[in-house]
Figure 1 (cartoon, rainbow, N blue to C red):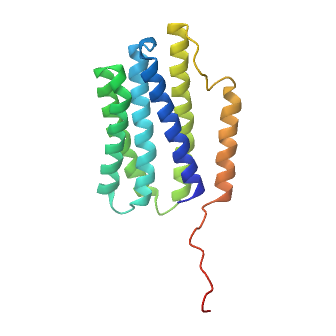
Figure 2 (figure 1 turned 180 degrees about the horizontal axis):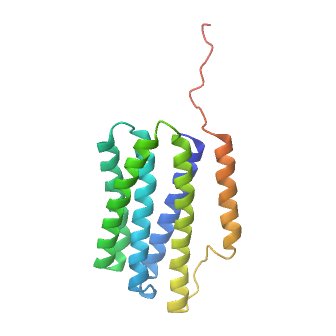
Length: 186
């Protein structure tokens, strides 16, 4: 596993978890429309990212990559939609299904030409979308409840710049090879 892929998965997992926790804690200050948007966005984003990664990993076995990415997208859509009500659950489930299905095909088709590039591009786009979703949650809570919460966005452009810089640095470093051949017996 490359350092970039590990970084991508950690960042996106933290963003999804932070969004779900904020939604769960401050549910009464989130409008129904924003709730459906949040569930749909989280499920679609996770389905897209995981579908691309699994499509590259399971290249040639489209069934396995599609099946697992759909399951993960459905699970995130369900978890994100539960605090927000049945319409958000349905929206999250359908978005997770669609994102996982479509991106598994993309990951499988592009796997032989530039697998790391497509994963990094999709991960960067998804990371920025997840930041916007988290900002939407915080903004909705601030507007509806006049409630002060722990904000991730005191300096949003600085955060976007830092994440962009980290993606560029990790992309420049490339994958780390932990299977270093030894010269024993040679």
